Length: 619
Image (cartoon, rainbow, N blue to C red; front, side, top):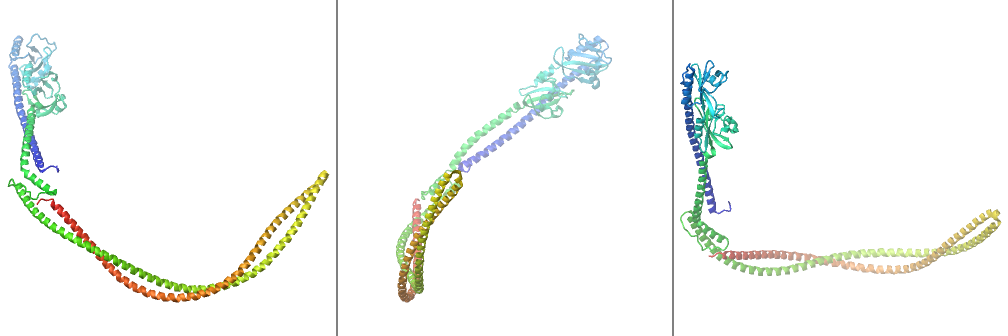
């Protein structure tokens, strides 16, 4: 609904309201027609039912009058003749008389009754005696197969009755049947006594359909009763028949009765649809004509909003109504917009020119300020570097003086160390001489031990030979020399172990002699080096004394340099602070220049966009 145009919204709303109104009107009209139809049906059915009931009552009353008008005769042939005349006159099938003595006389003499037949026990007799008159329920005649009833009236001396065929009653009921209705007769127990369709005769009315179980003719007969019979919706209307407990029930087919109402509803709806179609087309045309100024206004506003609007265009005024007044106000608005855009165009040209001049001036000023900033930055950097150099020189000079003092002290300490080292070297040289003598003596002793080992080794070899000879002799001696052979073997083994031990000792002594020679050689070299070290220590002591003198001179000069560098550093710091102030001012000026240039550029861009936008309008 939100996407529909105003024209279609108005048409849709109007058509919806018309549809609702037409539907409501049709429903009210159909309800009124239906109620009127049912009321008319109820009135007509009541009139017809009463008329038919009255006719049936009159018919029965006539039959009763014919019966009651008979005189009881004592002469049987005369009485039979009277009965025959009454049957013929009043259309009775059979007329009979039951006396108080139990005698039965029939109008038809051909009918034979059982010898023990007693009329006084029959329902027609007892009913007439009790009520003065009696009407039986219909039953099927055994001979003719027709529906008949018995009527009886009390007379002097007994009861006179007669059997009546219901063919006339059935014909009268059938005369009440129409295209949409038929009639039936039921008794007080709702037994169907007369029905156009004989299959329903003598059946219980409430068993025809569950919807009629609650139907009571004596109560519900005043109004139409809705029910269902044979699968159809029906309306029931009943009327009491005089002189009996019977009721005449008229059955109306509800669909056929209300068919005219349904036809009227369909025609009403068709007429409403045609009227809605005609009204909708007419409304569409009328609203289309009325809304044309709004459509023109919409097109003008659309062109204006799209940025290509013609501000010289005006909405045509075709009427003096609200739409015409709106168009007039819109034209005034367009005129004001036209003046405003014209002024904006002129102002944008001036702003663009001023912005261009300001941008060029700002760019030149910014270029000059940047060069000045670079030069100030270089000066500040040089001053800072010079200050840092002066501080470093002062620091290094102070460190040099401290190092010179420490070097002097170190030289003195080194000289003392060299003197102590020289003394220790002299002492070491003496000890080395003593060690050389001891090692030489040790070498001589190892040579003596080597000669002793040679002797022991010779003895071991002789012992081994003797043990071998002894073993040979023991072998020759056989069993007697076995013990001696064992001893000889042990001696031989001992000789071999002695020989092996002497070889090991000899090897060790040889290694000892080799090491002793190396030691002697090393000690001799060490003694020589010690002598040379003493001489070098003497020369180092003399050099340290010369270094100490030079360091003292360097320390004095470093102290003077440190004082001069400290004064230079203080002056450089003062210059640096002044230069930093100049640089800060230059930086601030540069930032302001850049900001001004940015604002000028934005102003120039805004001016260009404004010129582009207003150039889209035709003024």
